[in-house]
Image 1 (cartoon, rainbow, N blue to C red):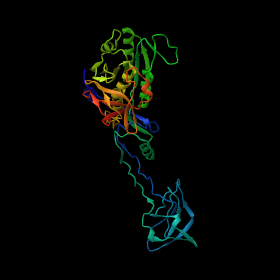
Image 2 (cartoon, rainbow, N blue to C red; image 1 turned 120 degrees about the vertical axis):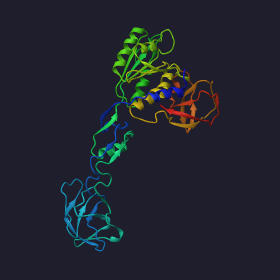
Image 3 (cartoon, helix red, strand yellow; image 1 turned 90 degrees about the vertical axis):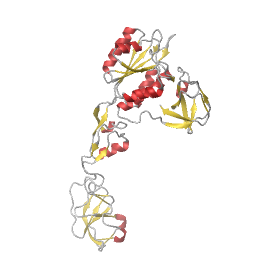
Image 4 (cartoon, one colour; image 1 turned 90 degrees about the horizontal axis):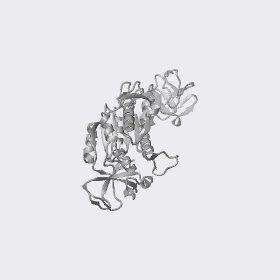
Length: 393
């Protein structure tokens, strides 16, 4: 049995990076760039006006320009106008600046008298309100670095240079096998000795929040041959295989042996933590295999601490092991030493409230919890105000 830090070190040393795909820009938000992005064009693509006003060629000693009212430049115009000597052309925001013009005088500073443009040149300088071609970036400039998170702002940047497809690390496909004869789906009548399955919906929701699209959930009864068939099938079809239950040492816990027979290389088995001690993690042909304890709190804890970071790394994310933050405890807390505790908690008013109902089977606190609090294995008691790490769902 290894410590939490040892388990995470093993996973860090064996991270798998997903393949690169080209994703539609409007579906790439939240992903990570797998390659540098260089602009294919100058931005602005042409000289344009930052204001509604009048385009002129700057001559500081002459405050008047002949107004050619018959010539106007508006956004979207395809024909380039040419500014004549001592002329001014009406122009609108975003419109192409006529050839020969280098300054835009906003309309609110202009008076028109007898066909002449009148303004106070002392209030302006050459180049005012003129957006030059390539002022933001030149064609070929690096505009987004590999490994960058694709935010809505980056979507706007990439769209502005005409990019419609972006290289990202593809999300893994995930197969989930729920083990146990006792499981029943919500919506069906619950017979004596049965329990409704919570782990499947929990993990599917979590995976969807991480950006995983292809998720298949199957069940395996407590028979070694049937379980082996399911493991072999899912291992062949999915990038990540997650099993829930059957990984402890009971008479009907067949998962570990089934994974061994399927050729899964064990990275570790059992972690000094509560809940979720009988956790198995392995790999096979560049695939992840996680066998999680079946109790719901154990499943969610192991998913949050181990499965989630490995999937994020697969999709190109970094800093995957960092807690969401560190905050003071609201109340005193006591535990036994020797195990790291991961506790259902609520972060409220910048304080961590450890919720009641910490048993592995107990789901009542799930409804109120918004994070998991970590208390190290060597700790026996903590006073209110002690800083602890928390991990958001």
